[in-house]
Image (cartoon, rainbow, N blue to C red):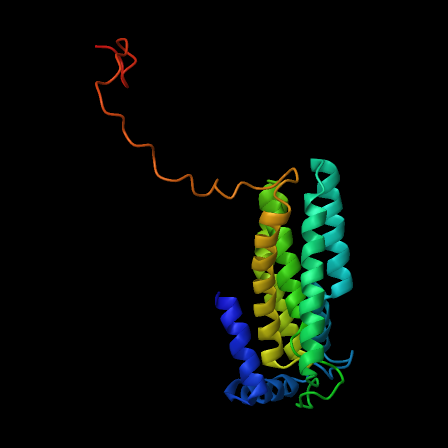
Length: 242
């Protein structure tokens, strides 16, 4: 719910030229003032530029699709269920439709030009940020559902939050997106994860490997039965015989 409200709020702010859109320019100017984007190989700052560019690959569509599909296929073959592949497919369809549809609907230009419905660049929302939130979130969920070893599950749980944050920060530092672009992308990604989970629980519930949604909430304990307690032999009533 919070992600949906955040996405609506950010969109209205961009469309109505609200205070966050004004903040976009301040953040962009600060990022440009660091000199990271224009750093050349002769300056130590170039290492920051390389690191920032590498961080954007946490949300790169080609890299993440290959990683997610590869992980899903490995899980499908090892667990003998095609449920992971179906989960990835559902999310990719939702992600592609939502991001592409939003970009064409708003047509916001990339920095430093700030204009809507220009039909170029299509900066809003950030596809890299949404991709990072969606696919790293899915990989972390698959690790939990399939009880992967801690050596794999631990880093995936950390990257679920770190990868989208690093992607968003790198995109702004390099001047590829406005602040509201990346925030909207993150909110959209979190919302899509929730929507996909609800769809999976309904459409894919009959596939092997489906998690039991009741496992986390076993419900109240059974009510006591009226009547005398059953007779137990000595030493079986909860303690040693005396």
